[in-house]
Image (spheres, rainbow, N blue to C red):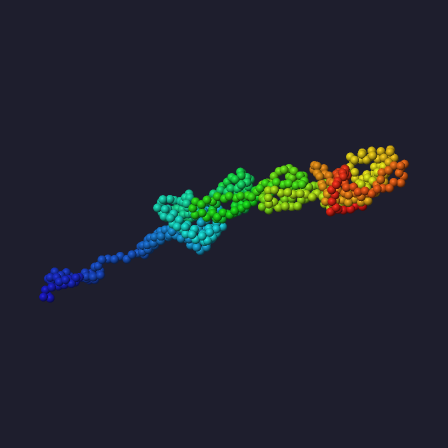
Length: 472
């Protein structure tokens, strides 16, 4: 059986035997190849092909990575989380970097970022409300319902906005924007300057009118009103905190406390000084002074320019719309001058009668004619006089100054005169004896050409001895 079959050299299957004559002659070239030589041919990849394949894989991976990176960088939730973490971490510098690029259309400073962080750190409820609002805005933006919440009155002071341009032309990009606010400011004086953080913003044109200031970014601001009046400066200020969560009312009213004051005095020619400044008004002008603060911050005094020197009233603080300021125009020196002049006049009066000629001193020229005529009559009638002024006692509390116009003054004083005198005719009484007497008189003097002159006198019945000075 074995001899009847042959086997295939490739697969080992039995085959029918052939005659030896039919078996072709074997040559070296016809030697069957090994099984591997008859299997499918595998061509090895070239190095260049391998590099191209690897590069393609890298590019694909790079595009995938860039896609997820872009999606990560532009994710609205990531932006909101960064904002919250920045505030919680008290990182005002990072918040400035985060917001400045998106709010470069208005002056955005580190001070604004500091204020936002400080406010939200101390108002946790506001921070939570803003985060909730931002998430709600993100949802609406993703749905395409809105593109910006800039004009939404219910938006908080910071809001989410979709950028006009996509990131890498693929991804929707978002930014945090700050609301701008216009603030109406009202004050009660026309011509008042309104300052914001000590920088002048506007001047009011009408009383109680409102001027709109802004735009303001969220933050704290000091708003001041200053009215520079003719007589004084009125000033008041207030602080506003612009961190509204909804459509809060941000109007500001600054009331300037000013009033009108009536001034009275015992001298209508007294000039009025406020805070030592001459306001070019006299009491007699009857003009009410104002507007001016009557809260005690201003002081008022009146001054009279007497020919013998300037005299002032006592200074008062303005705490009422009615004030009375009296000027004591007489001081001790003036009293001494007037008493000396009056005593010397009376002494010269007696000397003139004894001499029967005018030897009067300190007499007003209007009285000289009367005395000259009297002395002439004495000579004609052979009348004589002997008199001695023993003393004059002046009532120091009786001095009074009268002013008839700005330069016309008179002064009066009461005196008790103790004297000895006698009028006689020699042919009838060759040895006359003077008689002692006492008179009570009020002397009137006027101020002319830099001196006091006696213009007249009259008898009085009320003379006080409580405060006196004696001249002998």
